[in-house]
Image (cartoon, rainbow, N blue to C red):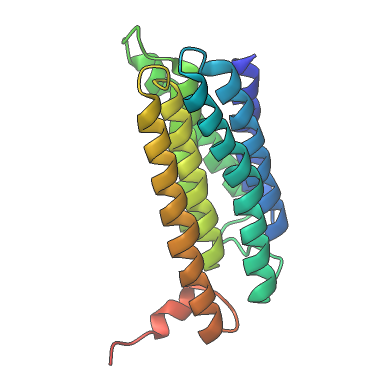
Amino acid sequence: MIDVLLITFLITLFYMAIANRMLTYIRVLAFQGVLLFVVVFIQLKEVSTINLVLIMLETIIFKSIAVPMFLAYVLKRNKITREAEPYLPNFVSLLITTFIVVVTILLSNSIKDTHLDKIFFVVALSTLFFGLYIIASRRKIITHVMGYLVIENGVFVLSLAVGNEMPMLVNLGIMLDIFASVLILGIFLNKIGDVFKDIDVSSLTNLKDY
């Protein structure tokens, strides 16, 4: 069951690679949160009930509800256009995403550690690299924030592989990422929106230190 959920999570990366609308990105992030919520429920069987409930609440509330709603609010508040405006065509993005997944699969097969859960490793590493690709290949600053959230999901998937042994480490990692990605970057986006009408990465080249 977990393998099916993680493969579905991997498919969402391909869907995000060919998506052009910002709202689609937000919906994919929310769906990824739901998938991670179910994975947590199935995977973390040996942790205490309190830790399990806390991790599940963090996953479903922040990843599936709070963060998508906040991103939608930022889009509306700053009047950001609906198009993601990628530098590369969708077909090229799909090829790059496929290449990322294939490389991570080959890398996982080259590792002989018997304690390594390869499906978690492949999904986590693919998500990390895909998040970096989103940041590098999209013009708008808010898509960079979304790319960072994708990276955080990859870190979360990797932490689930050892979640039974170190549940508090998962909790601390989640809370730190939530604080950094949502609060700090959210304030940053709102301030940028007050200065620039079109939130584009190229606008940052006009910033000067007086």
